[in-house]
Image (cartoon, rainbow, N blue to C red):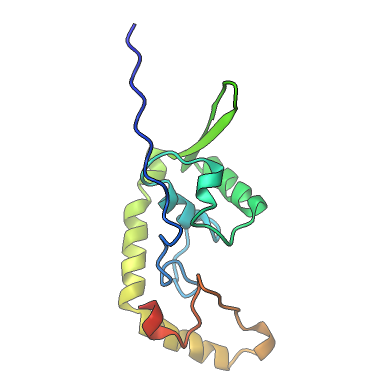
Length: 152
């Protein structure tokens, strides 16, 4: 009986794979929670283990990654595959439904790049009318509004 040959492992994830512009708190589109679109991107080239996902998602806690993966699994975008053996191995894979989100994600990121300056201006104008204590904190993944050129 012929068994299907195993698929080659995808290349390791690049720790710097995410553009600082997308995702950003300025992007007006969101799929799932804060991390869902990033996880979908990490899975686009093939199955990944939990520890592999943490490489480019350095700022995510294990708890948040687990919750995001469970949400994506519950919504039908990701499957969790357990492989029994001497060492139990769990991998996450995009479903056809999840893979169908990659095109719209590309479109949303491209739109954000095209409208980056306008989004920053609108964000800054909105911040002028909000008390200072409620301003959004920015970090390396989410550039501060004044970092226009570095983010573009």
